[in-house]
Amino acid sequence: MGDDENRLGAFLRARRELITPDEAGIPVVGVRRVAGLRREEVAMLAGISADYYLRLEQGRDRHPSPQVLDALARVLRLDADAARHLNEIGMPRPRAVRTRRRAEVVPAHTLRFVGQVPFPAFVEGRCLDVLAANPLAAALSPRLTVGGNRLRDFFLDDAERDLFPHWDEAAAGLVAGFRQSIGADTDDPRVIALVGELSLASPVFGRLWARHDVRMRQGATVTFAHPSVGALTVDREKLAIPGTDGMMLVIYHAEPGTADADKLALLAASAAPAR
Image 1: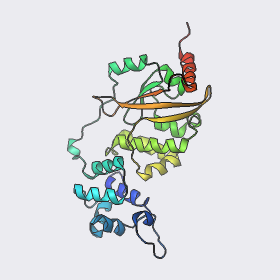
Image 2: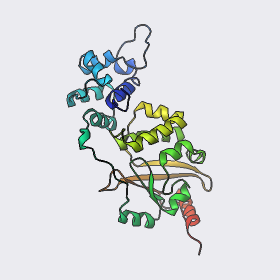
Image 3: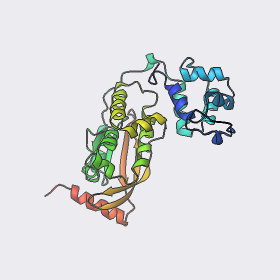
Image 4: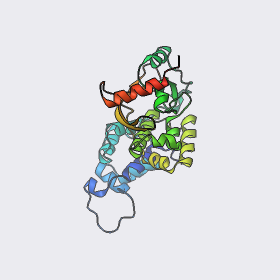
């Protein structure tokens, strides 16, 4: 049984390998041949039998109780986002309930807003596809245009990589946000194709994907190394678009009167159509 069929087992295995015995309060005696915690150690700390935990990891038991999932989240030191993800894959909807996903269509009012907002703005789909973008977004990064994919560009495009002086940190956050966005739907054909492509083309993506980190897609402060205006630090807002299947409105802005705001203004001027 592959990881795509046994999402809960893959998640538990990946996360226990990231917890050291010291972090779990377990004394180390002799040579350990496994990374992180052993299965029986996780079971002991969670208050369940080693055999039951083994069945969970192997996918032979797919119906853990909420209490068991909460105990495992505590032992594996999961934050709120990862614990929520564990509950989602531990108690998934029956397959019969899942419906075929429709093409992502940005609401007309959102398209108008993206075109009118005086800052770099774009709409991001559940698989991090760029579904809409204004000219200021393209001035910030030429990859922020309709048809692009944030994951593919981030890991496979050298020019996009060069925009991020803290690329490693940003890469980890992007992959964790992608996993949160798709939730338990790792068997979605679009997800399978994208993950397969990136895993083959980027060892870094493959390593980060295997960690099973999960993080809400949310705002942050971002620094760019822009080829035209130099170092540019902006605030990034990520706002869920109601009535859509996971679309987010992303806006970059800077505090008025700052050097960063002046640099954004320069980019806006470069993006303005010639008269």
